[in-house]
Length: 170
Ligand SMILES: Cc1cc2nc3c(=O)[nH]c(=O)nc-3n(C[C@H](O)[C@H](O)[C@H](O)COP(=O)(O)O)c2cc1C
Image (tube, rainbow, N blue to C red):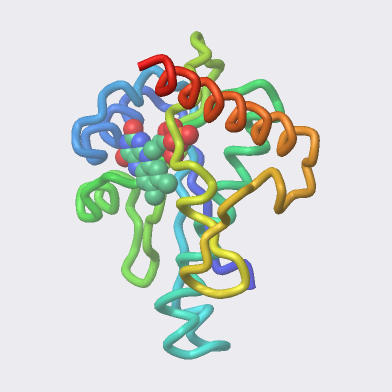
């Protein structure tokens, strides 16, 4: 379908205007290259109706955005997905016509830091097995990582015995 268009921005003045449109995220200006991901939802609508317009066009743009971020990372570059912006301001800054929607700005540059991975929810909180609500109780056992499973079980057993000994001592 390729219902997308990408605007490459490198001019400092243009990058400043975009950073302003992105709710004054001036940190963006430190990146020398932006890619603005746009979509033309009427293209998807023509083939897939309302669902194409409402859902597929956004999913296409999001997949392209993520793929670009991964490709940039693969090249040793850093990128940030920025979608907090004023639609009107971004449209004006880039002459984006009606019928075209900007969905994301990716900032690209060589990173000068290696941030720690932010905390993530444990897998048990976000994955269900077979049906909604079926929680994974023991990831190691489920993945047949028996070594890890045995180590964890042994640790739990040891803790249990230690607690029991402390209780007896009381
Ligand atoms: C839809 C979407 C919009 C985002 N918008 C912004 C943004 O406007 N400004 C920003 O600094 N980060 C934004 N982010 C977050 C960063 O891109 C974030 O660092 C990235 O998603 C990596 O996530 P992590 O830090 O949890 O690994 C956005 C992320 C997503 C998925």
